[in-house]
Length: 325
Ligand code: 13P
Ligand code: SF4
Image 1 (cartoon, rainbow, N blue to C red):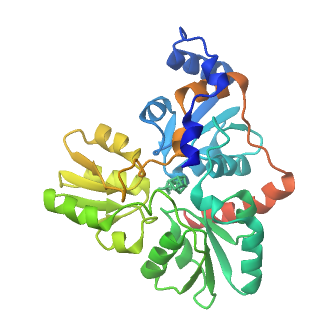
Image 2 (cartoon, rainbow, N blue to C red):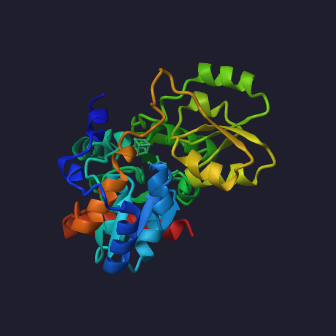
Image 3 (cartoon, rainbow, N blue to C red):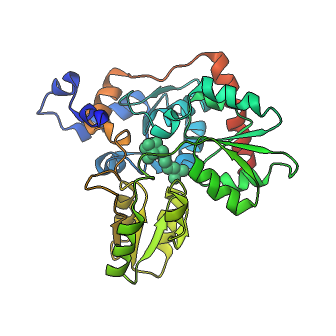
């Protein structure tokens, strides 16, 4: 896949003085520039370990909104950093690698979505936060995987709902709320990769293990799960459970926090379909410690957008934060 070749170090990364202690330099730059590092659970372990705050999409959006730092370095993907800029526009928001996109977000191009929406003008538009600012701007409310059920439950019963872009999360929320929803047919390339056949085999090898899954997984896989939740919910559940073994069906980065917080337990990544590392998000993994250092040093790449786009995208995001209190 073409994206894998993006992992090659850039010319800029190659120019870093090899004698530098990057961890120390990052700490120094953070203090000097009043910067904060926010990281998603799918980041490389090394980045998670130096972050000031780690969380799921909702927690990160809240942390970005209330941040007093002059610089917010977002160790995540583009739509997350864009969300931080929308919520806290007076701060400079940096993304270590601007190519860190998202297959789910890409599955929903703004013009095609506008046409789809116009075919259903009476529908209330709920968009998963994994979408661009241009999709957010066309939405009535945003949700994340941790508050989607709560958000949909707030919508008047007589209002038809259009849900975008993730059809798997949409189907899961429709089932949980009993609401009929028109679904945009997007998926996440990581979460659709898990194999039911291999998971069945793995369950035979670990009969005591519980299967815990993210709602971006296919419905057939979710049927096999003992617990379904956002990354933070999966982490909390596995740490607090009396069970000792877990098969984890989401991006493998979360296993780092699970192993740190529950070292006596065993966490087994759910197997992908092929013999690949497809349970790693190639976009999330574009961020490296070298790029974090360079971004803090050079204060770029920076997330920017027009005021018009920002204000339109802000409304549904603020509604989400209000409804999820
Ligand atoms: P959460 O952070 O809401 O668990 O979503 C996971 C994800 O796919 C982020 O890209
Ligand atoms: Fe997008 Fe999936 Fe990667 Fe999350 S894991 S950033 S939804 S491609």
